[in-house]
Image (cartoon, rainbow, N blue to C red; front, side, top):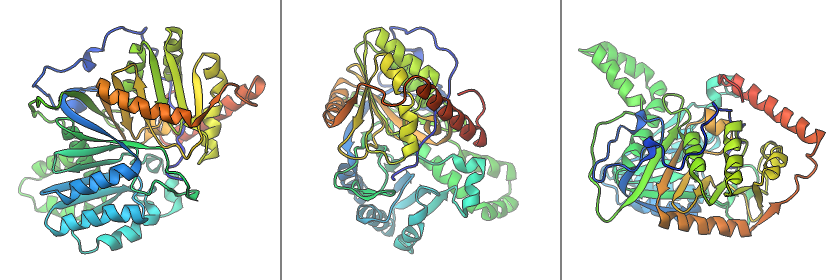
Length: 451
């Protein structure tokens, strides 16, 4: 397995009817003026002047990222769910170590569950190099996983080099042809990331830094308390600590560059101010759709509002295609998605199951000028629990490129025309079981409300 299955997504308050125009919060910004107080906005805040390049799998992302790290002058920040110990990961680890040895400040934060088996190797690789490794919610024993906070994992995949270039997407630091659950695979998993330059890099950097500081805060707690006790102004020191662990809403203004006109937004899901930002970005775009919605997600079990938005789009004449797992890494994840097939097919949604390899891509396209690439699945763990991050792009050329990749994957998929055994009473029972499991999981994790 590359990542664990992700439970169902919550029902949100009923939404207004589809609007033909962009919501005010998603309107294009004043050209040349970019307010970076993005974290205070409940919806995606777009900026112009960006360059966004699509990367297909680790085969394309790792060389690009390593090249940027090798050219780094000041600092590298990296956050990931899985940092494995295979040859592909070793190349990234070596680039980070080399940068640290020549004086670049290198900070890496990995998830304590996703990277648990590789931690001893990572510590050995970076011993004495200067790489500052910290672990988000380390798993010291399996009983710890029963604690609610340990069900909320760092699922983001972010890397920022010199505050100039960032990498965002669904790709973990692991070989495309290796699956943690199933071992070596003949074909690379289907996955995507983006390389971004321009104003949108700033919020990616703010987020990655905050993730590192949140994870390291617990490790450094005794030192922090001693520093606080010695501080001339303890209150100022407390404020400084809070600034480190929060995603800071800055006041910077950046100028747009003439050769990079792309509109892009960085959206996160966390347990503070941005609890539903990613889900909201999807739903807002779906409501505006006029011709097509294409969505790929390995774990798909959205809440009622999300499904209603897809149904309403079909009724408006929009073609809706879902690309889901054909090769299952977790049977319960496939069971969850397939429990929705009867409902979705009856509403006119097209469902395709990817057959060529494991599906790990988390991407979506709406019409000809909206696309997103990121770490968020469409299920309760991603939409309600985990820390996630996506880039949303409003650009016809980028959307066209991603659409070609989506169509290529569709050609390697099997279209589902009948829901299989889950029909009639069996479908009702299957949905009831999945809904009960989802509610139980979310309740244990401390999430209230209906699903």
